Amino acid sequence: PRYSTAPVDTIRIVQSWDTAQKAQEINDPWVCTTWGETLRGVYLLDVFRKAMEYPEGKRTVKSLAEKWQPQAILIEDKSSGSSLLQEYRGLLPVLAMEPEADKMTRMSVETPAIEAGLVWLPESASWLFDCEQELASFPRAAHDDQVDSLSQFLRWQREHPVTGGGPRARWL
Image (tube, rainbow, N blue to C red):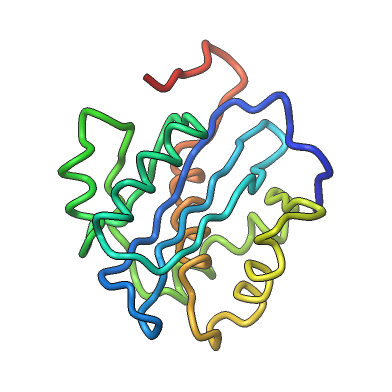
């Protein structure tokens, strides 16, 4: 499904990072997907994608956290992600994610949520075309970082679903 305006009844904001080691063109870019969770489903609010080295990536993680104020920042616990987790633990709501199985298996496990209409994309966004192209081309695309970020988020969301009751978490 598509949305024209972001939901106002968001229960939780979550960012999902797929980091890279080097900024060279042939290497994978850093990707952050930002999600708004509601009782109707999850809304892709933003995609950040850029090839960069660790110092710039570290600053960008902090900058996007300040912009969106997520309740959780999911970071794959390998390579530069492990360093980010060490540096931001206690300062940002970072959570280590251990990848399970291969990329195709990880995505296939999460596909039912997409097929059920629980994943909402915007009608328009500057990043939308590139994101849709990568998703549609997976696993044959040149890069699969947006796919990794998506499957990582959907796995975490499935394991930690939002509920309608109780107070909303705050980011400090």
